[in-house]
Structure formats: C-alpha cells, structure tokens
Length: 260
Image (tube, rainbow, N blue to C red):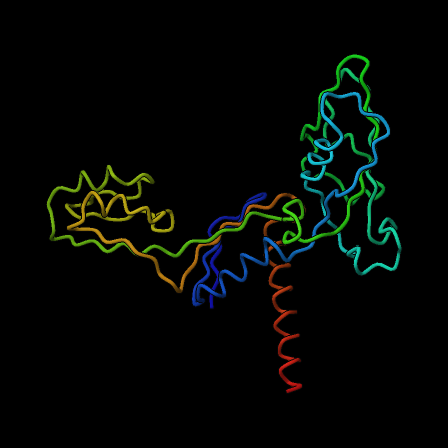
C-alpha cells in the first residue's frame, strides 16, 4: 500500500492511495466524516438579543462555526461532572456587542485561548443602532455521526482513472479534445494523449464524443482522496486522527477475537 501526496495546502489535502480496495478507502472516508471528535457549540444561554435573528437561528449559526480543537478534552459521556460544563469537557465562549456593528466570530471570548473560531472573520449577525447581543455559548466534543456541526472535514475520493485510447481508430481528434470539460486531452504528432490523468473526473464526455476510440473506467485498487478541513484541525491531522481511530477499532477487534 502506497500514498502519494498530490496537493497539500492550507485546508486542503489531495493524495493517491494505491494497493487498497473500496471497502478500506470508504472506511477512511467515513471515519473522517463521523469518527474524529471535534469541538462545536451545542448550547447557548442568551441574556439579550435585539437582533433580527431569533435565538434558535443564532444557536444554529454558532453551532456551525468550526472551532480549533486541542488535545486533552473529554467527551461529555466520559466526564464525571453532572451538567457537562466543567473545564474538562466544555469551553465557554462569551459575547457582548452593541450596534451598529457586524458581529463576527472574533468577537467571541473563549475561556480557553486554544479553543477559538477557526475562521475569525465569519459573520454571525448585524446589529443596528441601539441593538445589543449578549450570550454565552458552550462548546463540547462530539462526533460527526451525531451532528454535522462536529464534522472536522469534507472527505471524498474517486477511482484513479484509466483512459484507453485506440490511436488507429481515427485521424481527427478535435471532437474528442473539445468534449473534455477538464481540458486534459491534446493531440501530439497525430496521436491523442492525456496531459494529467489525475484530473480526469471520469465523466465519459470524451468517450461519448468518440466511442470508437476512447474508453474510460476506474482502477478499483487506486483512489484519489480530497480532504477539505473545516479548520478544527489541518487536513493532514484529520487523516492521521482518522487512521488512529481505525487502528484502535482494529486492535480492539483483534483482542476480542483472541478471547474466542
């Protein structure tokens, strides 16, 4: 099994996984989406809200703000506190703002500087003259399988494309080249070539335009992953944490099997 990094930049990771099968690739994707715990607001206490947005919608907006997530916090189900509001399992983010102003994520004052909005310029609500907003938001660890607010990234993959070209089928490749929406086909010395195979989306527009010469399919042992982090972790960290979760599950399963 091999991994080749295709692209790595802030918030985005693309890599090629080779020597695997669809079940394994999908387990990575599902764990990234549902099995990596992150911080998110899931409770608010509103003292004053004169804005045009109701308390319920405001809670929804705050819940969708990605929060940076350091190590050390417990899930509410793992904590011994009764209300799930101690420093071991929760973080308080307070907000006090008077209009006229645009309230943004950077206006939230966190009880832990390491837990803060990942996108500080994200707008929350606009306050008019004389309006004010005061509240306390409680953030806790959770899983994406419980609510999308706890989803650390968007994860997807596709098969590595295989494009078979019959160079003897035709002399004119113009229709085939123009049909490709990604622009990765070109003619070179009378032959049709693929300039960047990884960028192919397997839409089959080229094979529809030139069914006599082009066949497109996917390699079920190679997968191109695209991971877009929400900001709670970097995209690389999200993948590493997902693999740690999978390893723990496999180790636990192996231990149980040994007891048979």
